[in-house]
Image (cartoon, rainbow, N blue to C red; front, side, top):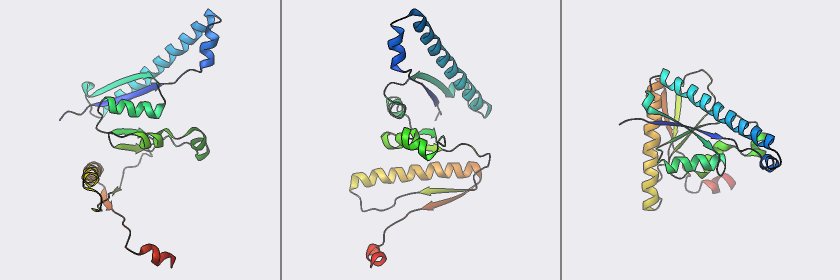
Length: 193
């Protein structure tokens, strides 16, 4: 099986007011084109650097695709649409570590991706701490009381979680812990009297 990684960079939208201003002067049109050119160059540079890093750890040139394009709907929706349109098997996204107040006002892109994506699993990674993983927790749902079609989907997801977590644990020489939480019949009555 051949692995293919797609590195996708979404170019930021320029404010509409700039386009309206560009109707008034050729100088503004030229400045906007220069900004768009610099955005594209920055995207190419960031993607080339990321591709080089992947090649340095063993990925082939052919295995890594780089794509940059304008934001069409919104960052999170565009990421999900790209994953669906290109039949991605998994989506890996970073959590940038915004403050809670920033996330409240702007919305956290990674959380929106988790909410919107319908076609593949999402792995959210935090910024690298430089440490390797010692213990990995795989959370699964083994409750069999779901309707047959949903149960089949959940069992497939559980198998995928175990496969991916197991692979990560093996590559990191880490312990793998599996967790499933269930509610005991009558638990609520015992807790609340």
